[in-house]
Amino acid sequence: MPSLMHKNKYKYVSIVSAAAVLLLLGVYMWMTYRSVTNDIREKAGNQLTWAMFYESYTRADLVTEEDTLSLPQSRGNLSLASSVEGMNDALSRKYHSELSLDAVAMYVDSLLSVAQLNRNVTIQEIVMEGPPTGNRRVKVVRQNNDRCSSWSLLTKPVSIRRDQSRAIRLALNNPYPELARRLSPLFLLSAFILGFFAVIIVQLLRFITEQEQMAALRNDFSYAMVHDMKSPLSSIIMGAHFLHSGKVDDKPQIKEKYFTIIEDEAEHLLALINKLLTISKLENKKLILNKQEMDLAPIIDDLVEKAKAKATKPIKVTTSLEVTQVMADEQYLAEAISNLIDNAVKYSKDEIELQIKTFDTDKNVLLKVRDNGIGISKEEQQVIFDKFGRAAIHEKNRKGGVSGFGLGLNYVDQVMQAHGGKVTVSSEKDKFSEFTLYIPKI
Image 1 (cartoon, rainbow, N blue to C red):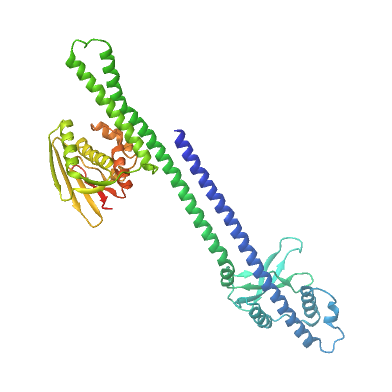
Image 2: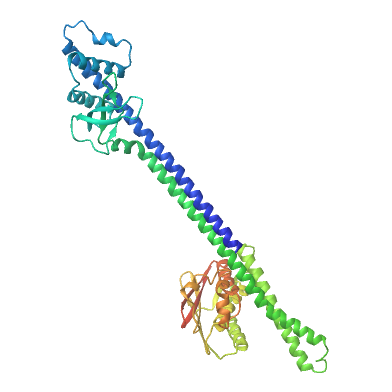
């Protein structure tokens, strides 16, 4: 339960962190988008103001003629927007001359071209109803074309009346190429950051899951190992107590039997401990192999005889050794083969049929051990060579009458890796299992 709680905590932290990063990145992208759109609005608005100034100045020169009122002089040192507002207000009130949207559009087109902004625009004259200090309702009274839509980007209105009741604004009907050009590096960088962060989160969650699974397997492995060591230890303790009691002092045959049981069980435990130590050395690359030319035939014959002697079921063994000479460490290779034979016997049916063969290839000598046993499922084939692989299915197997906690196949795998070779498995459920050792020639 604590492991599950820790796992969920890590997952929640990862998810919250991912959400926080996404939120921050989203806010940053939105603020950048707003900044870019405001910059485009401002640039386009500046061009609109200049276009209105040119149009108003030209129109003023035409309509005022010899009038003593000089509109340019009356503007004084006002800002450009105020000059446009003053000229248009005076021209409208005194001369009834209104701003020409087509003329403004012509000037805007030229200015936008110079500013390298999209020239697909609409010039709108708007009426702003309501008090200047409050929320004013905007109404479009005229425009130079009908291309404006709800997707258009609108600039800040430029007033043409002193009371700011009328204004001109620019609608950028297609600002998106410019937005895409300026925002695409940000989006690409954001996509890269998101992808990189997503990979980190996925790897982190996978690592957490693997660690949790490994911890669970270790726990199962420890339980299985202790459970299976309990039986021989119990036999040793029981035999020692029985011998110590003196009840069999006058029965030498029974006494010898108990001594044999104690010795066998002690050797079994010692072999188990040695196997664990050997696997640890192999995993840490601390075991030095003594590789030399060796003959497989007598080793396999001896292992088969021992298996027959220990088995409680009839065994039929067929050997076909095309190659007998290999370069290997005799002690560890023999132990690896012994583990394969023991597994075949352990997972056999009522009658055991073993086939042991060797083949010659360009780089390796292949040694195959095939049985007619219960087989190995595809799922179990993925984990049987792991150190804790059998622990995950230990309880299920033990209920089926199989004991042990799976060090044998991991030992075989480690030994073959130390030799520079490998071990593979081919199996069908309830039909057969075949293990192949790849023993390098060099």
